[in-house]
Image (cartoon, rainbow, N blue to C red; front, top):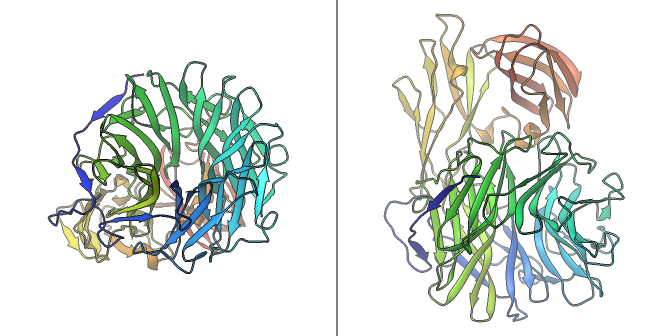
Length: 608
């Protein structure tokens, strides 16, 4: 498989220096910690403190989990990077999944009620088991979870089982992913819990294992699709080296045979060893994996994009993959999707002297985003003789990027958290109740206040967050938004769905009204939007609209000119639409529910 290989010369950001000139996304946030970084040593004076996971709370606080010596180490920071002394003991928790010696945390998640779930491996005295524990919002172990707040899970073999990933479903069930060893090799391993107890409706008594090629396989990351299906990504050994591996499961833990080959997919990128470390799902259902690829004895960042059926997306990079060489020996550990669809990857890179933390941003097509850092890449170093590594990443509600990992000086390892300024212009478009009126919902993020420049595609522009615009001449128009935040971070987003702005009536004016996402009930929240599915899509003679959380009150169908085709009153969570009277094209489906309004698009490709 041919790959795009990006080789970039990078200027490192060294903690303590800062350019006060015009800012690009990716500069260290000087309001966080010291020069944009926080270094934390646990009070037990452990030499080996390494952050492996990070989660962002709704109140802006940051939870970090990992190794605190031979125990689980958890800490929480305020939004400015200071320790939250209301959490645990003066901001720290030292915990264990078991009474035996060696326990580590590799994943953390925040429930909708604010409780904190930490997962990893626990020593049972003979080998390792999946370990999971839950804390309340103050860092107190939740005695209502599992057995006094903890659960150890063995997959039935007298060999090790290790959890590396966590995902919390919308219904509160918790899925862990990792590896289970049967004495010969390891397999993809998933476990699902209800309040700390294995869920008997998942797999076999709550457990699922999957073998790919008769050799060792393991899960490094999990993501949940909008329809509830589970994507697990990691590594599959083929007898000689490793490949990218991913599998998709339905909500019961059964492999989804519509995905890849019998629910599984492996990718060999020609070089001698590859592995996926992280997975993220785009709003359009495409799946992004990032990890490593060894090329001529050196490792590079490897990112790939797959279609929703598990095939490589040929529109991304070169035949679906992008390999990026930053400092010579590089690996990616975490990936996220921004509001505007751009892809963030964090990891580490070595230049022969020391290792640096690295953040990369790609455009949606896999090219490096030149508006981020230096040619799309930011490296952060503590200087010669000191190593830094980014293991996990999250995006704050204001668009800032937070990376957690470790700093190493000699034989001493400490938690390190970096925060980078970032912004993203983004909006989506929905039909209004009034015919030929459209609502543009602004989702842009950045450090306030934001300045706005709207380009309406008809040689006119507007400023401000909530302008209105009238198109006097029906035609195809492309809206673009450019923002600049208070850190001088700039971002531009253009809508590609230009068909929304043409009217069938030659003399009808079309009104566009911009509203902020935080103050409008249109569209629904992401939670509601993600629990609506339209299938099949593309469709032929019929398609189904299904809601997982609320009944649908009415369904409106709009054609590509903005005209209403039909509007039906219903009271059900599943509705089948007869598409025999619809011409080929793209339609917008508007579902009105008690919890909000949901908009979906469906493509009609022809009759059966």
